[in-house]
Image 1 (cartoon, rainbow, N blue to C red):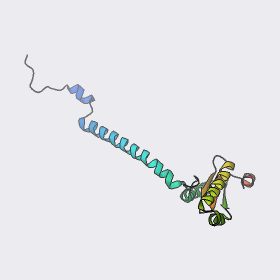
Image 2 (tube, rainbow, N blue to C red):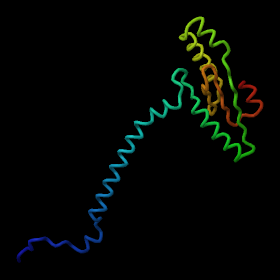
Image 3 (cartoon, rainbow, N blue to C red):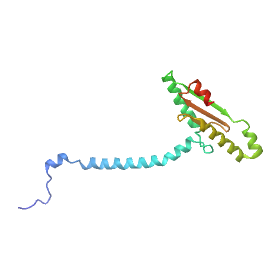
Image 4 (spheres, helix red, strand yellow):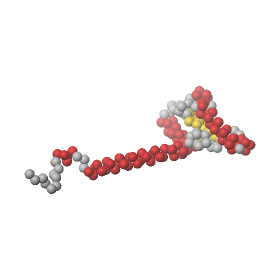
Length: 150
């Protein structure tokens, strides 16, 4: 018996096989997903840089604004939800900078940031919102907890 020059495919195998065009599409999608994951991994450090004050390690003004907006939405959705915001102005930081140099002022600012972080609850956040201004956002913080935090 002579074999045909072009092999015939089994019709039953065709019905179960993924057409080449779909298989190629799946391979392309997998490649795009890997590329996007790689790009996302590369952007994560940039996201941190965009939301963290490099001197103090605290969240920055941009993060503060985003968090306040989220807290306002939460308060509107749940009238029983309580959030407290404490604004801290570090007195005499300019005097320290002018008298002892900016290095001393930077150390004073970092020391103040560390002191505030030590008393925060896990869900609280401290942000540097200006040169010598810090803000604490304390979610679910009633009157007694707010007084203790202050």
